[in-house]
Length: 442
Image 1 (cartoon, rainbow, N blue to C red):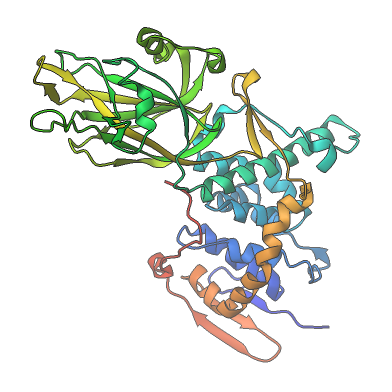
Image 2: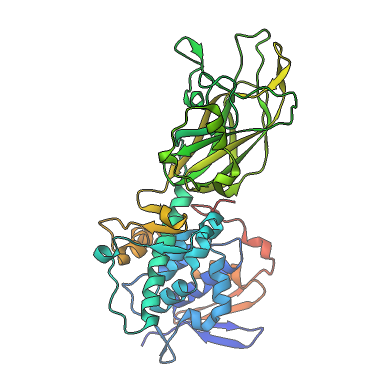
């Protein structure tokens, strides 16, 4: 019978008999509990299904039972990558039940994107084909299957949020402007044209003139999808080359709102500037995100306003608020705001994620990929990276891991061949910095 190493805590007179593979997992768990370190490697190692389960004193040994639910929740809450949550759920049946029942995927998704909290329900329209519900013997079994599906959806959504960076312009059409000086020649549609001039004339939107420089204006756009992850908005103030001095009619500040419309925009047909102006009123919309104010420079270049984090626009409506005026027109001594071009940079979450309009945008629908089942959706990423991560853990070695974790304890390993004494350092800061492959947005 193969001998097992004994881990002796001399300060506490505590001795635990742990197999090497379980000890590495134990060590890596606490390695993550200190925020500067990571759990992803140990989770991948523990997912190695080729090795047989170990036993401790004749009984199966479970890390979650040893730590207890409260400590386990604290450890997993330190994860900042949705792939690590998926790996944790793939360790064993007990780990999967613990991760899914505590909704760690949902919490991870809401941490990355708080707008997810607007959804009250999740549907899988094609579930009967790809992920059918099994006959449940009780309401508890049915509830568990629903939780399993929610785990898959939120894990997929969190992954899309992390990788959802694109330079694609996602504006589909214009909804309306709060005012227009000369409609439709100076209408909001001109802001979708990147060039300065069209048909031998300048292309821009112009507000109506105001004597009060504090009167604000707004431009409302419709995005290509009801679920769009927006990273930044770019605006180019208009420079009037046809006026003396080439004035630039920028705003002082700009702010953005995202949400959905209470109206059926597809049935609207606008013919006047007044009708268009009515569509910009806040009573017609439900805003799920309002940005901080950004200062706008009085320059005619394309100015980028990067959002604090990727924002999920639920409903596909974006409102640009132009706050304050800086430039008067010499002809009438009135303040104007003019915009030459607008870009909204982001990426859609469709076609797999769709919001149900009939539920007031409260239900998120997830269409599983035709080549993916419930089991492969949860474990495909783990399997693809498992061997590489296993090799990295072997290179680290157990002594290095334990030295970092149990800084103040004197550790001794009793092995079949030799015995090593390790004196740790109690300074938490010696752990160093750790860089994950993917960092959650702040």
